[in-house]
Length: 354
Image (cartoon, rainbow, N blue to C red):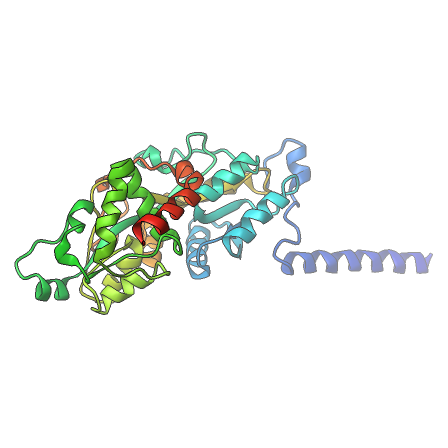
């Protein structure tokens, strides 16, 4: 009898230690702990949230800390590259490990929605957020704007073109006087460059779009392969004008470089998005986190770290950045851009660069 009691208590100790180890060990060791509660119809009692993050680790940590401060909900996160996390969410369907996927272009979230991996949710917390920043079916919500603009090194511009006004439109950029002072990325090597090429083809339509680039490309001093090169080259004063993502240009503004950002009418905008993973262990807290990400405080915090444009019009953008309600956005067809990619780049190589 004494031996049986000792064995019984040993088993209890073993399971107690195992439970502690599972709680404090691997990040995703016990994401399904509230399944029984949900199966019985009860609301999950957990105070946790599990996040897959494509955004920078410093950024998700800052957001997670603020969310925990406001709600008391503990946030665990796993940061990895876009492709890795998209594939992981798909692979985990039926037994999802995470509650939230944050970051990555909306197109990646569309692919997950089509695979049935996302839970629809449309936040009602901030109704002023423009409808075009989120999926009509609620499968994803854009939380920051990534848009193209024109960067101007103000000091070099004044030296090169005294008395001349800055170009305010895409068409004004196509001025022969700017020959040798303009840079934009190679569409065949850079997604930023392809976005610029395709957006102008869609803005102008057909042959007018191709004619635009046949006149613009000879003005370019170079066509770098990296989207980060044009902001750096005008920031340091090597060239005068650049086409680049606004948030990349904004970094140089924040560092004190003499860079002016112009967002022309009919610019192209895409969004980093946030989605709720279907069947995740903490759906209630996942909805709270989406609401939080769209809040003024979270939007301003993220903008201060990433230099992106907030989708919440109430959130103050960084100095020099434009508010989303002031953007004149092109009705851009991302599906068309994807389906035409090979044909468009072939024509770029054979007709524009010949």
